[in-house]
Image 1 (cartoon, one colour):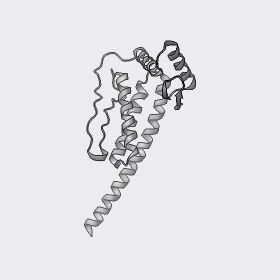
Image 2 (tube, helix red, strand yellow):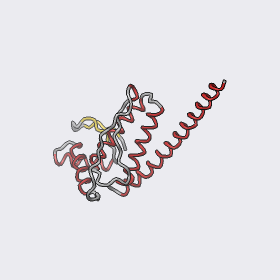
Image 3 (cartoon, rainbow, N blue to C red):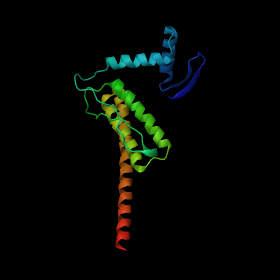
Image 4 (tube, rainbow, N blue to C red):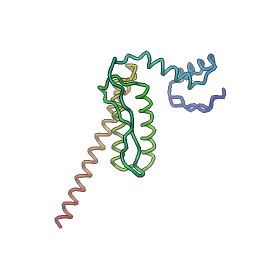
Length: 179
């Protein structure tokens, strides 16, 4: 998984996030139909989403990001639908989750504030919880359950550490004020 391949067929550099067998099938379809592999992947995604067992009704979820700060720690993560959300357009959800993942990666490359770091982990945990309920295949949902558990545990540890730091700072402030 995640192998980077520079293709001799003139397709350019492609990062494959699938098994070798899936990559071979995509390449074969691309050759047979004279299409770029990315076009084949987009087509397959649309077919999968069209055939997914989605709930009827519900209102369209608004993925618009909200401003959350200014300066070097400013980045706009999108709103994440809760695991219980109904009627969510999974193509829009996937695009929003991928956008958030890119923003989180950029934020973590820098030196985010403690608050932004917690916000990044909370966003990842929220997406993992959403996909654990809404991924189109049972196997995918099972993988997201594991991811949700791991990210939630890490976030809980970070929150515990944050509480300890706040308590220590408050204790020092009380000592300073009493002196």
